[in-house]
Image 1 (cartoon, rainbow, N blue to C red):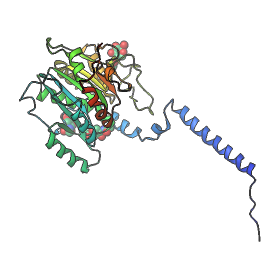
Image 2 (tube, rainbow, N blue to C red; image 1 turned 180 degrees about the vertical axis):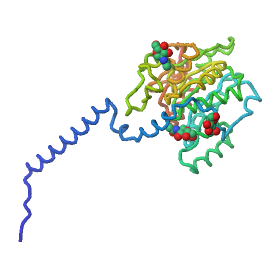
Image 3 (tube, protein in one colour; image 1 turned 120 degrees about the vertical axis):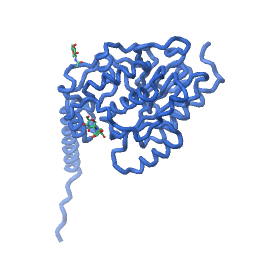
Image 4 (cartoon, rainbow, N blue to C red; image 1 turned 120 degrees about the horizontal axis):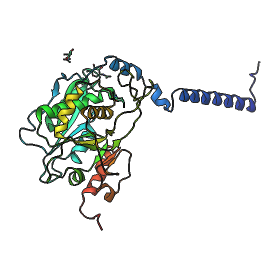
Length: 333
Ligand SMILES: *[C@@H]1O[C@H](CO)[C@@H](O)[C@H](O)[C@H]1NC(C)=O
Ligand SMILES: *[C@@H]1O[C@H](CO)[C@@H](O)[C@H](O)[C@H]1NC(C)=O
Ligand SMILES: *[C@@H]1O[C@H](CO)[C@@H](O)[C@H](O)[C@H]1NC(C)=O
């Protein structure tokens, strides 16, 4: 009977070492080829949607139709602040948490606040998500949806849809805030520090975390890639970071108008900066620490004196909210 030749332990170790080395080398080469992008991002099939989107080279096609709409919201009242919250059709839990926390329209006594969630259409035609969304809309009457496909690359369309809605159905709103669904927002502090309802409304006003000299990506593998033909310059003009920014009602209509003469880029916040530049308006800087684009751990007194913190999901929002709203402890000594 023939015996198998068993490799010695040292041979096995040698093979393992060689293999590990090869894998590491491969990973390193791929990383270097792509700048600092992690592998996960490289593997996403992202070149096709970008190129198909940009090959259109389009100006905002403002003729999408409203699937879900609330055209009468502002016939009943003139909101001081409209919250336009970016969500996807499937984001039921996020919307639910926001309604119960910072999106509660009755949060600030005596101030009329209107909350609306913006969505496009689920990428899979006939998905049950649409039916659920319609039920949710019938129940809460706070969802606006147009018939463009809801993808990351169409994000700018979603914000523009919100502006179109304001222009058509709520032109007398005093202020508008665009908010992502993964933020913490302190509406009270926004009111007392920035909007100050007892003063005359600001004009041509936009504020948030103002980003300066952001480099525009002309490298195809990048999530923020924008072709040179669409945006030729090396940096973007100043703009307010996307997670949460505020603008005066008068500016909404102006941005919507100017947007219809420009090539849309999918980087929604940078696009708003381009619109401002075209209008010859500069974003207003906010005091350091009011708008936070990085996560900060919750602490009652800190959170009582800021406006936005990025990266708060629904569970965390629901968890911190009761403590923040509790009157028991005061923060000013
Ligand atoms: C919107 O209008 C453009 C130009 O008028 C037209 O080419 C396009 O088909 C329209 N799109 C929709 C969705 O109606
Ligand atoms: C954006 O939405 C339009 C209209 O539904 C669609 O034709 C297009 O493919 C979408 N773009 C991307 C990049 O998803
Ligand atoms: C590019 O930069 C130049 C010089 O600063 C400026 O005049 C021009 O308006 C910019 N173009 C765009 C599309 O922003």
